[in-house]
Image (cartoon, rainbow, N blue to C red; front, side, top):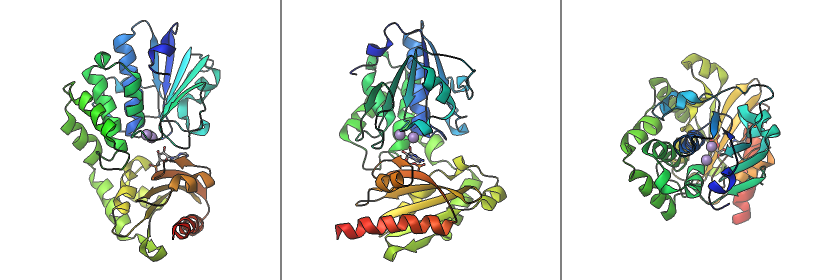
Length: 319
Ligand code: AMP
Ligand code: MN
Ligand code: MN
């Protein structure tokens, strides 16, 4: 697939869907495609299916049109999955995916092995928004669509900080900026700004973090009772793992939060040599070489022991 128009021929209904617990890239790419279709293909009925996006993305046009439930028996001509690396990550639109006439996947996860009929997966791309941009025609991108795509690139590159940022990422970003978007407000409002409670849990997690493997691995853990105490949901924990990763000497940052009794969501970030997508894959998750995640059962000690064993293996392989 060179351009998205190739798959839009003869299509009258499109469902756009992202992954569970949608992040900036997921929301940005889904809404970016939705706005693009609304603006340029008024004859197509397009709907976006996502778990309720975080309030920080309120500036994205038509974000209130997002559907968080699908009607039973509904069938779309085309289902487009954005930023979704595997079947079990589809979220609210899973029944639509199963019954769609045609399915298209646009993604950048190295662990995506092509779950759709047509797939555009570029593991070296910074974000799904970058992959999507290249499938669209620049002159058809409005300011509102550009705002949404820019959001995704900013979030998945950590504001152009991570090594997934390429010269091409910057060129795409420059083209989006040409549309006149309020880029500085987007970065501050959706990425950097934290609520007081979010800062409290960040501070507390850093303060109670543990160094392992001779200072090459740092571990942060949030238990359910702490989330209840501060009145937080999982969405409030975004960014903690990146802050852990910034610690001097650390190769891998591990962040766990307790989803339910003896069940932990694990986030991993690596600085250089460790491929965390391989480790996440071993435990049923996935992601990218330097950013990956999975869900694991057991006590936090079991989870940390199982993962650090794999990190240690990779670190010693290299020596
Ligand atoms: P997170 O640590 O949740 O921010 O995720 C880091 C990266 O790994 C993201 O690109 C996610 O899409 C991916 N990821 C996280 N959890 C999972 C999972 N359970 N299965 C597959 N990929 C995941
Ligand atoms: Mn994502
Ligand atoms: Mn992404």
